[in-house]
Image (cartoon, one colour):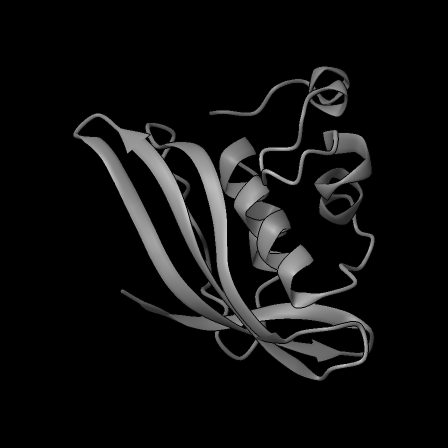
Length: 134
């Protein structure tokens, strides 16, 4: 698992690439604070993959498309997130789209996950719905 103890993670730069430290970036969102935008939810989900937080990934997945369980491959190391485009997804929007590339490394080498993800906001919370892979 890629997860460091909370005290160590909090002082480190957030895996999402924002430049902020974990405790003021994705940390509060992973701990239950609502993400203000679809992009922030996307960044927090990337961070959850990077630190191995499957429970958060399931909580932030819309119930209509959420799998019953999610297994995170401990051999995948997430290296960088690049946001390529976004549409909607602001603090007053009901839905949004975020296109991104997530660079990773696993035993077979380096890879890129390129996805256009769809999000909805319900009762003040953003949820991942689904995405199209490229």
